[in-house]
Image (tube, rainbow, N blue to C red; front, side):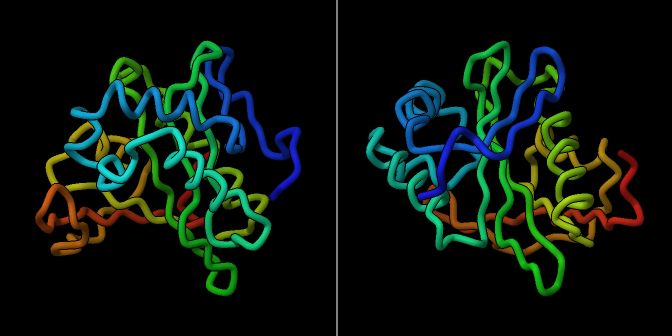
Length: 185
C-alpha cells in the first residue's frame, strides 16, 4: 500500500482541493454513491457494483496498491466535504498517454468543480508525468460531462460504438483527446 500522508494533492481554488484517494475515504465515498445512486447510475457502470462501503474500500485498496501502475485516483473536496472522484486510468508510460475519468455528486454539479479539477490533473499529466495524449470518454447524451472536455479544448475524435456496458445494455461513448501541444494551462 502506498504510504500517506497524501503524496499528491493540490489546492485547485480556495474551495476545491484534490488529493490522492486512500482506503480511509471509503465510508464517505460510499455514502455519496449510495445517496446519489439513481443519478450516478444513469452514466456510470461501477455504481451497481458498489453495494457497501467494503466494496468501495476494496476498489480504493486496489488503485492505491504499490503494484498498480496503471491507475491513480483522487478525491475531490469542495468546501472541505467529499464531492467526487477523478483519476488517471490506463496510464501508458511507453506511449505517453492516459485517460481521465471522473464523477461528481449531484448537488455539486454546475459549479465548475470538475472542469477545474480536470485542468489541474491535465497540468500534472503533461508537465510532471510527461504525457503527450489525454483521453476522456463520455456517454453519448451526457451533456454535463461532455461540456468539460469541450470547455478544456479537447477534440471530439468520434464515437466508440457500444463502448460501455451499462444498466444491462451497451452504450456508445464520445471519445475526446487533448495533446500536450494543444494544452493551455
